[in-house]
Length: 221
Image 1 (cartoon, rainbow, N blue to C red):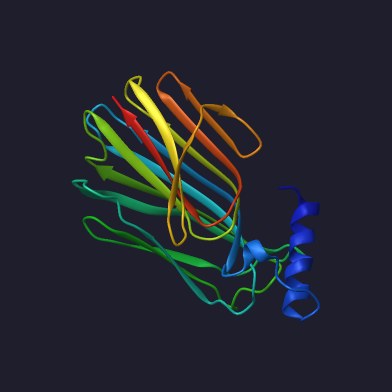
Image 2: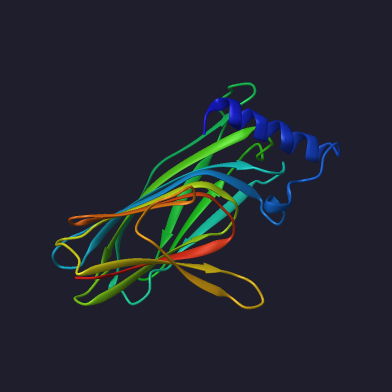
């Protein structure tokens, strides 16, 4: 998303905050607009994984001083390492660099990233966070499933999975939440909503302009 689009969003959020406009329907119920989300997973021959996550987001409302990200992989041997690579905060209107802090709380099977903002976030701020996690026993021989959930509106999401060998099959499914959850299969190839590619040992899945939903990548090695 270029700067012109970012500023257009910021102006919309400011108008909502000032009571001039109503929040766009697809953003209702969200605290943030995620401009960019990336998760890169490198898996070694022993089934261990190094995961690097990047996310960039704008607050829809002012006043948020703390935020949390929880990550709990299922059926793994444990989290062996984690660190914050960086957290950056700037105001898109004034171009001022502002204070932001992040720390990781880790136990064997769960990770909690805690972010603090002083002064509190305000409309016009942009936050970019990068952190790294190493997980033992992330995958096994046979079928594996990795699910990534968009908890609020996301403009762009990219998932990259590097496997130790070429998968026998790879599929992606979308879960649309509602009174009756709908599960749909994403085809290989690119269209206006998705880009799903399997290239030798790499699986790439990109999503454009998504709302609250979950996506599961299934592969067999």
